[in-house]
Amino acid sequence: MDKIIYHSIVLECVTHTAFEYFTDNKLLEEWLTKEADVEPEVGGKYELFWVPEDKENDSTIGCKILALQHDKFLSFEWKGPKMYKHFMNNVRPLTNVVVTFIPIDGGTEIHLLHTGWRDSPEWEEARLWFENQWELSFASLQQCLIKE
Image (cartoon, rainbow, N blue to C red):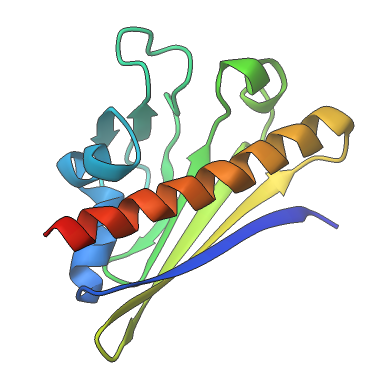
């Protein structure tokens, strides 16, 4: 069975705003990456760059949006950082991130699933690293909304 990363968060904002934090380049650059090139449409780019001066490494260059329903659902491909690039970024299919946005009283509930992890020690190391990174990223996202 595929090992899955799962994280959820409640944001005190309307669902449209929460969705935009995952699809708007400037908002992504506030909490997740240094530079974003996202085209919010099926087949559109989902490219994030943590080191913009070295776009081939530590990025999701070449990743695409696989499915999208505005303000409700987003699915996109994902790549690993330089230390996991040699095995994560050359497989098909790549790992996949699915994010759902559920309106609730006073905000939006977000659920994130990161799937596609293979079964080897190096893949498990990468999965555990990403588990921590998603947790840190969601904390950063929460802080962005507190600042508003």
